[in-house]
Length: 439
Image 1 (spheres, rainbow, N blue to C red):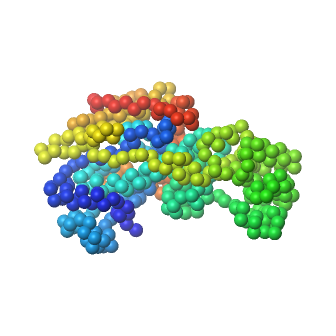
Image 2: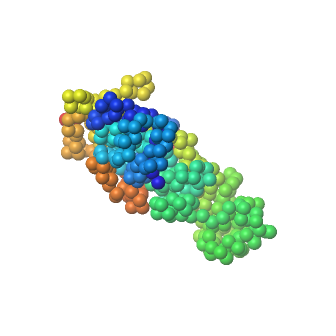
Image 3: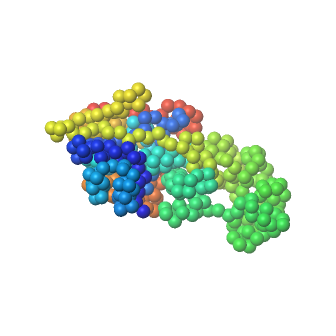
């Protein structure tokens, strides 16, 4: 299935105009970045890169797409001919998936002809804005949860394919499982799930429902005990499954109080190893409030798949450098009020002191001379990797392996955050972004 029409019309009309006036082949550099962090958050998490690379493989204008463009007079015949053979042949460098970002971070740098690069704007932004928003919220929840596992279970609160993407982003940012089977199939994410309240309501009694579930899934299952009275539900669960019951789930009530009462009841009944999972509209603040409660794991739905109130990361895709008619490179930048960009090709480094991040250092080559390398910043970690080289996509960042690699990278680099970055309150970014001229 082609991904080429996951595109705004104006990208193709710009392409057509550029073909007409001769600027389509002009070498250009586009940059995807965020001017600020949504909601006063202290860091962002890059997610969606692996999905974007796979969609780039499928960015082809087949006969169906070309027919639509002709029938609806979207672009002229010259543009149609160009798009017939379109393949991205440029270079894409960017932050590794799972990496942390800050205002001004050059998360993605796309180099190629103007025609090559301009048509990728909507695809790149729609993927990275959504997935990074989810991953940023998920990371905050993971930090709040500490060592307790988190399961993503928000598919019913998102569009069908957004739900799959959200499950992947949450997994990269620290969640351990998802309820979404398609996410499990596509990305190798562990899946989980047992029963909803409808299962209990289907049966003539709560005991009948629990007995049937145990017979089907074994005593290691988790029983939902709050359909009626929680204390009665817990007693019935242990009577049916025995003290070896895997777990109980709580989905309502004042969770810190209820969790304490249920833990005490389970211990009194001899079910000291039975785990308690809580759900019920959790977000990072509710999870943090449960830190002192006897909870073993969390299930999060609406909040994580909607970015916990900030469903987009606010990233933009801007032209930052191009060649002029003489072949010289020119840094270009938007100067609009509150929407200014920083021109020039960039290299990014995480400045560290004793392993702790202290700044996001962005080296800018205004005239497109060679940008800084890691050797120019010995006390820093280089942040950008080659994702696409001359049109060749690095498959290491795709699929199951790419997802696992992104998750491992995120958990590793999160350890670099200063302590102030772990707070959930609104504040300035945890580290400053420093722009410096390339050496």
